[in-house]
Amino acid sequence: MQIVNRIGVIGAGAWGTALAKHMAEKGLHVRLWAYERDVVDSINQTHENRVFLPGVTLPPSLTATNSLAQAASDCEGLLFVVPSHVARLVLQQLAPVLSPSMPVISATKGVEEETFKLMTQVMQDILPATLHPKLMVLSGPSFAAEVSQGQPTALCLAGQETPLVSTFQSALMTPALRVYVDSDMIGVQLGGALKNVMALAAGVVDGLGLGHNARAALITRGLAEMVRLGNAMGADARTFYGLSGVGDLVLTCTGALSRNHTVGVRLGKGEQLEMILGSMQAVAEGVRTARAASGLAQRHGVEMPIVREINAVLFEGKSCRKAVTDLMERDAKPEKGQA
Image (cartoon, rainbow, N blue to C red; front, side, top):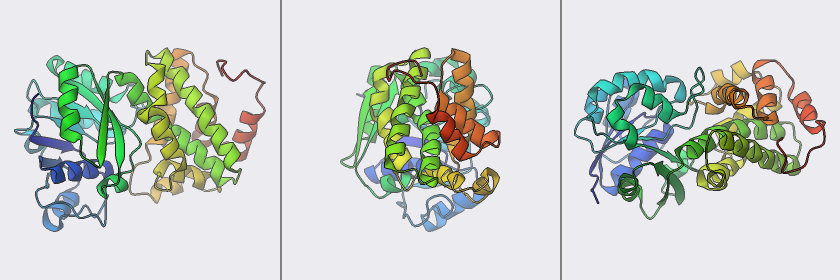
């Protein structure tokens, strides 16, 4: 098995920084790319990402750069961890500096809003064909703050080349971070993206004060919607009952550290979306993914009532309470039916 010693991380948000810290502490040579000059300076001069992961001390061996070419130089693999809405632009700038055999792992949990494409599909649009078999996906229940503190975490790494996936499974594994492997890249990506939309809806339920029963029902029916869309897109339904599906869904719909749940709570309490997003430093991927999820549902002929209602709240001015009422008053259905 190939040994990975050098890895680049593209994207220095909280999640990218936490992953970079984890690998640097394991002993890998890690170079972290950040778009923001102040983030690079903060990491290199104070060993802290004061913008996106404040209060967490980073190992001195972890270096940051504004240069994509430098981040990718001499690496045996790249972790791609930029927000979905800028992924295509960053990939276009990254492609010319990649070696023709560079493995790339997407750890971005989102869908491209304009095209409804998953991140590996965006990568296939831009990166050379020689790299397509070497694309992988990392996802699962993982708050960046807890990973950065060394709290026990389990993730799923999916890819098509089994030996390559096993190599990076070993590179990422530590006593604090357990990595399982899979081959269902579509399912793993859909789970990681759609759970953010469901977390918005769960937050709305909590913001309205509707209780634990309602939130449990929302999570369960949200999972059913995720499975339906996954089936239509060729994913393995079993994937959604694993770490990247129900694991991440439960975490993001209930955890106090969830940005998407927090946005939903504030919506449920009557705040306007523009004011909420304007007050946040980090990206709440679920807001953009909600549009993409609605587009995917229409494209594949899948009924996703929770996705439909959260879009109405976010973008059509519908009240949160009316959205919940409309969900509850839909025609009676069998639990294992289509909607």
